[in-house]
Amino acid sequence: MPQSSTIYKRLRSLEKHLAEEHPDNPVLTKAVHSFRKLDRVAQDIGLLDRNESYATYVTWWPMIAVLGTFSAGKSTFINSYLGLHLQRTGNQAVDDKFTVICYSSDDEIKTLPGVALDADPRFPFYQISRSITEISEAGPQRIDAYIQLKTCPSEKIRGKIMIDSPGFDADSQRNSTLRLTQHIIDLSDLVLVFFDARHPEPGAMKDTLEYLVAGTINRADSNKFLYILNQMDITAKEDNPEEVVSAWQRSLAQAGLLAGKFYRIYNPDAASPIGDAQIKERYEKKRDEDMAEINTRMQQIEVERSYRIAGMLEQTAETIENQTIHKLTSMLHSWKKRVILFDSILFSMLLVLSGLVLYQTDSWNLLKTFGENIMACETSSLVMLALLLGVIGYIHFTVRSKAANSIIRKLPAEFGHDHTACQQYTQAFIKSTAAYRPMFLQKPAGWNATNQLILNQVKNEANDYIQSLNDQFTNPSGRKAEVATEEEESTAESVAATETKTEQSRQE
Ligand SMILES: Nc1nc2c(ncn2[C@@H]2O[C@H](COP(=O)(O)OP(=O)(O)OP(=O)(O)O)[C@@H](O)[C@H]2O)c(=O)[nH]1
Ligand SMILES: [Mg+2]
Image (cartoon, rainbow, N blue to C red; front, top):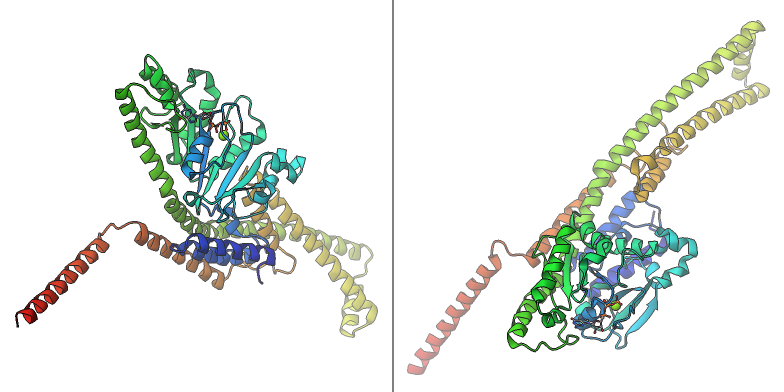
């Protein structure tokens, strides 16, 4: 069955955009194609609806989030990175919304409302209004109060997404803002956490540090967080500039961050001039070193994102084959056992009851006549038989659906917060236990040799993508260099040979 046309159109547009954004990296466009194959298998099994796609579960654009305290210089940093005056900056808390920034070839900067993000599967906020209760309760239009989209022509952002966020304060943050922050942290490939060196007392922001540092440091993906102490120029004026850094170091260490694991920068355009030439040189040196590292990490995320998507593809195929099918088969097995048990109890009771009635009324011969009438195709007896079969069927199918429901009811407790997995298993199990499917089938609906083959194909494709990414971005064997050297040598030889020939002919 074809995919629903809406999702099909969306995936086509995703493919088109990826091909435009990354003409030199076809892996991503190919990956969308592989996701489609996965979708078809998952739709056959019932894990996905016809209008759903695994491709909408991944963030296709590499995403850099800039979080941090009020007026820490987040927007100034972003403007300077883009080379544009995109975000308003200032000492009053100017930002109260998350701004998703992406590339557009249009000359002018455009600002679009949050609904634009909510409705587009290419962005990390696709259908976010549904998953954040506070927003969904107030109606999807409310998303505009929290997020906006800005498009700009800076080449620096081409093929990436950057998020500027309102100043973070764990104490006064609304629940919905905290949920959005968490969502952004989860989906980002790189998170820059900004603090402000002007802040005299980092100890006063205990909860904020707790959230932004302690809460991020032990995550499996803790490597994607860069902690940045910004506006370092201000400390140059202090009598004891080292003390500011030490105070920050102590507070961050209390929150679990190891000393030396944070960057110290300032923005030369926004900074106040540093008078002392020696201090200036020292500050500039440190700043340049740290900025170079931050920039390298920002450039690397495209590569990380490609690996992430190829990995996700393989992992999804693997999970369907090794976990989902296994779980559905065992659910089917216990369902069958229950149906057989309850069928046997109910039908034995029915049989005993009818036997008792026949015995009490001493009318065993009725059975014999009924049999003979059926053989003779007598109408009233045939109707009776049909009624009887109807009652038997009704009891059996009621038992089947009740047994299935009792298994489905246990799923939420098993999956906890993973609503998506719970919903997928429910849908697939309903499909597998549908009335039209004979009960003796061992395998879940849609699980056949063809789909197994497709999953293997997808896994192989994912491995090919990783291989070609390796070829593109790494060079462990140094082959290219060797080839290049060989080529250079052979060119040099041929140049030398031509030169000798020219020399000979000249002499002749
Ligand atoms: N001295 C100095 N000032 C800076 C630096 N970076 C930014 N500023 C100033 O700090 C103020 C706040 O900067 P923003 O970029 O608006 O800060 P923000 O983190 O985006 O602020 P909110 O969005 O309101 O949380 C502005 O007046 C900037 O000019 C810096 O490195 N040194
Ligand atoms: Mg700002």
